[in-house]
Image (cartoon, rainbow, N blue to C red; front, top):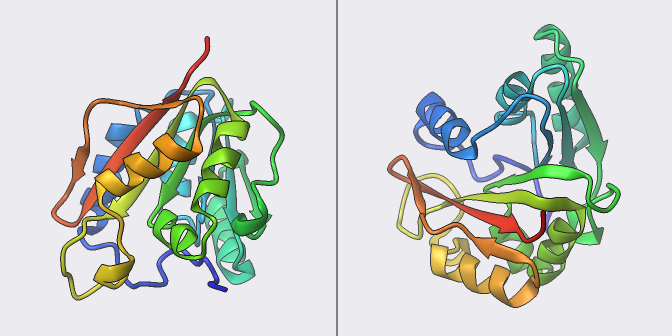
Length: 195
């Protein structure tokens, strides 16, 4: 069993530019309700919370208590009251109600879930918690060698992610573009059918 800890494979590679590129690709709007799955210490949670504003909400979900504590402290120091941390094992589900979220975001986490054998399950959970018309966004390392990040054999290609979501979901449809997020990452987005 893996401990799904954001950033456990080392640095993102690209730093602040990656965060800016991801935020731009996510098309965040004030008032959105978002889950950051495998949030770790909040590398993306904090900027997402700022973008959705006080009327929005970000659920930061991670298994690592230390990372969530660090994230809570960072949110407090930034004056953000719209971040809620939840300690949970994603292999057991997403501890949120049905049709609650405008966006589910996962950064460098899906490959671990796939490797543990719970890839199909987590996609069904994402589908369950998204509102109709909501977005699922997956950031993953490109399947090429780097000195950081997960080992090459653990990485997922965009085609593998598309195949997984197509197989496991009845209502998530891919957006046509694969977003190139810097030298080492890509971002795929899926929209839940409905309103």
